[in-house]
Image (cartoon, rainbow, N blue to C red; front, top):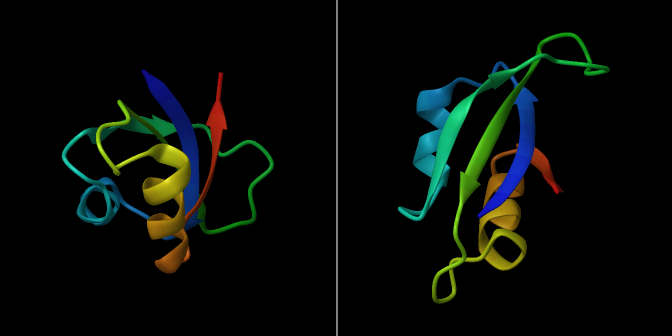
Length: 73
């Protein structure tokens, strides 16, 4: 299982889900430690499957919507 914290301005779980492939999902909102005002953070998790990988697909796709993330171990 891979996990990442992602954040974006005025982000909600419904908008975030639209960017994720079926093998990744939103776990929930997390405290916005150190974020700029107006930014919201979420934990996402899932498994790499086929070409739908965290590094190769999920995080770059989120960046196209100005949602930024980092994998957590």
